[in-house]
Structures are given as structure tokens and as C-alpha cells.
Image (cartoon, rainbow, N blue to C red; front, top):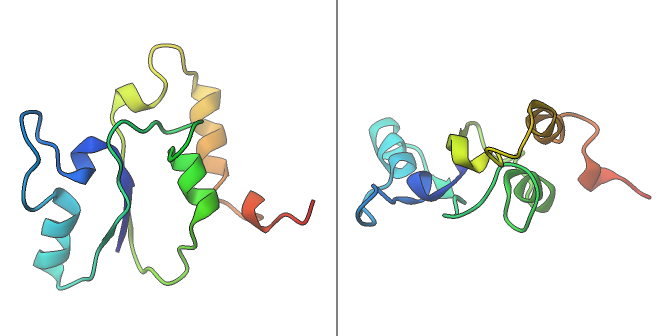
Length: 102
């Protein structure tokens, strides 16, 4: 399983970094290997290590499952729009911008 997300998925509980973040717990329960690519302080759309950036930079074909966890503040709230969220989600559909030859 691969995980993309914010500080909560990375392991922050609001007070400290926990020893077993949510993705690792899910992996342990199910006997799965986990690649936790979550990074605290990231956004869903736009910027280095955002969801859209991570989708373009990484290949996910070798994973059976993906856990995506971002909070409302990561959707560029309050300045972001529903269109921004739609654009971010569409980047993971085919054809992918990472496969573009232009």
C-alpha cells in the first residue's frame, strides 16, 4: 500500500509524532508492506510535494492499494475552490501528465 497525505498520515497526532502512523497500522493489521509518502505541511493542489506533485513524480503501478489522507486545510482552504480539487483528482486519471511527450 502507498500513502499520500499530510502530517496526520505522516504520524502527527496534534501533540507529537507517533511511533506507528495510521498507514503503518493498517499495513500491520493486513500484513501489507507500506510506502508512507505523506509529508506534513503539504497541500492537495499546487506546490512542492503536494498531492498533484507527488502523483506526477511517482509511479504507483506496483501498489495494490492507495491511502490518500488530507485535511480540509490542505485543500487550499479558504482560498481554494472545488475546481482546484477536481483538477487535482483528474491528474490521476489517464492519460497522466507525467506520460506527456510535450
